[in-house]
Image (cartoon, rainbow, N blue to C red; front, side):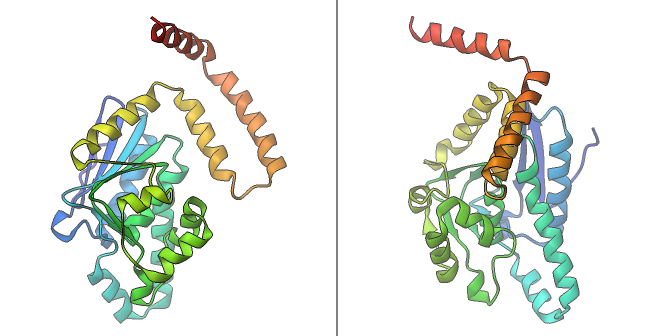
Length: 264
């Protein structure tokens, strides 16, 4: 597959693990136009690469991402070109939907400050593991704008409507402990073991059927938007697809072997 070179992100892959690293540490990985464009290419690249089984998204330095680069926001405000703004938002929304619709699992390794667009990016990931150093917030209303990259839609599905309104309306920053308490992140670990913890989780996922995980991801993502009867019917057809293309005997044998070993 084509190898891509980027200026604002790093792209790595090894032993089935793909990694995208936001790499503007000097500005806390603030999201500028170039980074949005490169993320779009990188997500598509990783989604199509058959060697990548699980994707990890993280940040360089002491931040995951402090959100949109304020120079880009200031440029948008000064231009006052409504049609250009509309096109830009829709394009970035499409980019941020890529981890969500990707059939392979995507894990956010949240290494530090995660604000605005940075928080909206982790909401598009399937699992979120945070360093105890991480800080979170959606400060958009402080700038007179709304969270427009999924924060106002996806956050309430994860933490509940009342808590989502509190986070959005106040724009306040909260710590990793609170993020875990409200269910925004799956787990909080010490900063020193964040990378190891995320890699171990990724390897655990790779031990399961990645076909079944991908199909289950589709079902779970549809659960908020499709009525129960339609979703149950879809699940039946999905299960038939599993039986058609996956070797269940292999996984059953492995399960019973691991169970036998645990009793020794």
